[in-house]
Image (cartoon, rainbow, N blue to C red; front, side):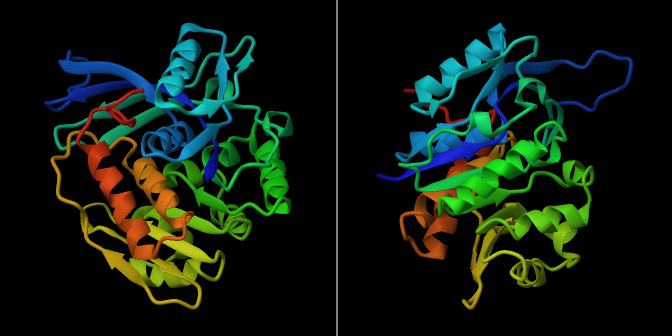
Length: 295
């Protein structure tokens, strides 16, 4: 049975959908809601709802937010660790969503910080690993995340890596992130991240450059669809799926889940891209980063 180990942050998202420009010092009315978030937790949730077993390494604080986000994972059918960090708050992200659905995020990693080998479950039974860039960027988790990555590779499990936003990657620098790419089997990233890591403006050229570092490159292009290329194989491109965009938060995580689900089952790259695009289209039509239907 296919089972994906998801490694990265679990957060509580506080989302404010704002229909008017923000004027500093003046009240701006908004529609505010809370949902579970965090890249790895989002990927695990979309995988589970789509029929692929997922296990999340979850670190939360001893607080109401932690209990809430873990209970939500249970409703999605995601198995998870239950590591409660005494004295730490559960990670929280404040998300501002504008009238076009674009989001601006203000994260506080909280209890996610401090990841170590002690958090890694027994690897027997897992098919692949999804790794978000957040624990590698976080200086309190970086060494532990790298140790986990090496253990996973020694066990023979393929690693799908999403390096996270350019704003976060700038904290560690280009050369460091490129070194991480050499440790993984697949990189899934957006056009801005691909440009930053490759130095190439054109996404096709970016994929060619990144293939010198990792065997398979997947670039999400938003309304322009997505592309993928494996070493020694032809480039594959697909268009985006048309949908009403409400909130882009978590769209990349949903795409990653759909891609992983198809790719790890032996599907063609085009099928994996389409599956990713379908989940991303569902995600952007909702407020928040998780599927709408809970188990």
